[in-house]
Image (cartoon, rainbow, N blue to C red):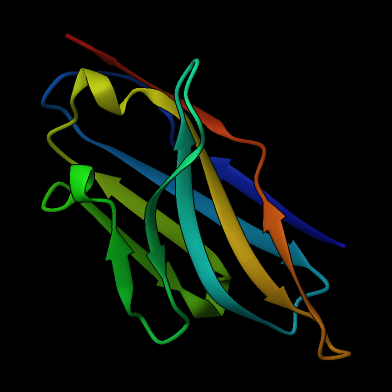
Length: 120
């Protein structure tokens, strides 16, 4: 089994910064893409940013220039540095990982979510 554990959420004023972390553990051979999604009340879950094992990144237009995704492959951890936060960034943030197991198969796993609240 694989577990993804997120941390770093909380309450911040508009214009502030937060750094989210997500550590994967368990029966991991390697991890392909990792990413961050978010879901605000009444809205669908949306991709915020993703990063491949080689470091190629992709961002939602709404966060480009403000958020930075990175990963530490040795620690099976992905980070999301969020700067210049806006009230509309408030949501539950979920990490996601495409995990390859020793048998060669792979599955997508999700973290439990961490709340980000931005006060105006």
